[in-house]
Structures are given as structure tokens and as C-alpha cells.
Image 1 (tube, rainbow, N blue to C red):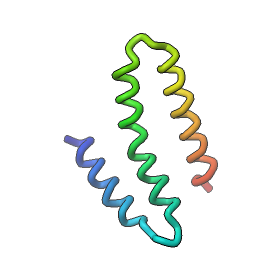
Image 2: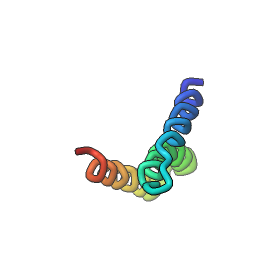
Image 3: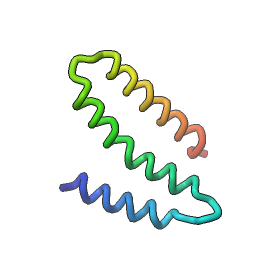
Image 4: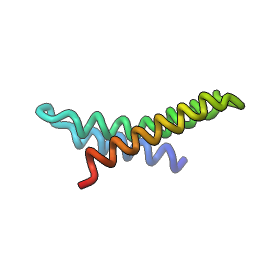
Length: 73
């Protein structure tokens, strides 16, 4: 229930970020919201596949690093 509430609040916040002249914050925010969904879906389907788990870990770390380098000032 809390996850659904958080998703709805996150989506409404993302819509409030929308500006036609600068779409980057909105796109980045929706990617931040989609990341946990992608992680849990990948982890659920990975099972004992260490290669898939390693790719998920590296992709998540890459996105977190990208976010930190571009957004944290």
C-alpha cells in the first residue's frame, strides 16, 4: 500500500516538474521512479543467473552515479 502511495505521489511530483522548454528533469524523475520496478522485475526473473544479477547491479550503480554527477551540486 505504501509503495502505491509513493508511486502516485512521485508521478504527481514528476508531472509538476514538466516544462516544455526543459524536459530533462521530468524524464530523469520518471527514470528514478521506474528504476525500482526494473530492479525488482529483474531480480525476480534472474533466479540463480549470476550474470543477470551482475548486469542489474552494474546498471543500477551506473544510473545512481550518473544521477549523482549530473544532479547533486
